[in-house]
Length: 350
Image (cartoon, rainbow, N blue to C red; front, side):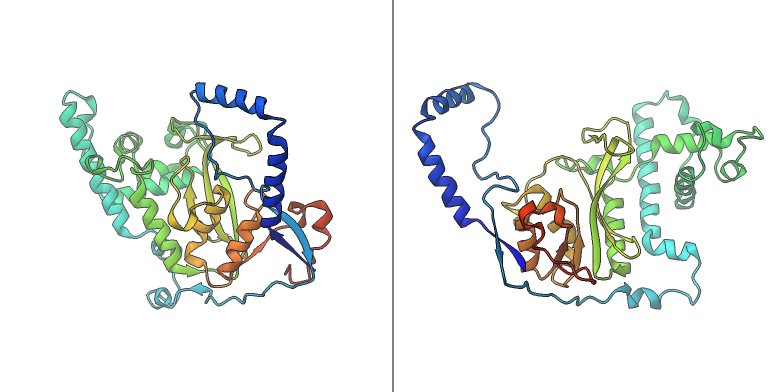
């Protein structure tokens, strides 16, 4: 037995109820309208809707269509041909991060240092600075990754000579003062050619490079999980999020799609606030738009998306079904009187 959704009956019912209540509430609505017109806040859009508005749940005896997975999962054949018989971790890492982004980072870091010293010719750091290279940028990024594994109370402790804190790898790779000055001038793009309407404009080249390589190297299996993650950050950003239910509480919110079996990250989207709707997401809820946008490269291949209740809505399920995709969500998100109508077999199909 299957739960279907319809909106016409509920819409007509809501219209009749609104007409019957219009006379009784005329004075109240007039007062509210006058207050709203005098207030500075814009009136809510008539087309905006909630997840429950306009839907009526009907239990029918029909069975939904089954969409078969048509993808070719695994590492792409072109990538395998370019790998040695027994690749080491560095060679695998270079599949994701090529030399070109490091070359670009070194170029833009040197450019920004020159721009800074032109404006501040008396800066004391001008004596300490010398141009960086792609090789040094790779070493710098390696130390940044290692700092997440080796915990120290502060930055300088990584270069401490104290026996209880000494980590010789850091000092052997880059001196402390050089690491600090690289952090001061680290840049990913030219400040003179930045778009004004993109909040991620300073790191966009690196993000685009990673997104493209994640998709070109590997194709996922049928199951894909979509969820949000909060990266701890307490700096100055206009799109910092607060979530008391997360361990980090304050940070940068990222929507990610990962393969369910391996956890491989297929793509991500950094939340930077409300953005204008695109053609494929016009007129739908923001939670639905996130799923459609992040799944866009993998639609039409019969994938099964696993999502939580925040993304769940009947219109999203119908939208994905039209694109020959399946969506899985536990029956707790359904109305209680219809939850028992959803049958789950041993393979997890609904």
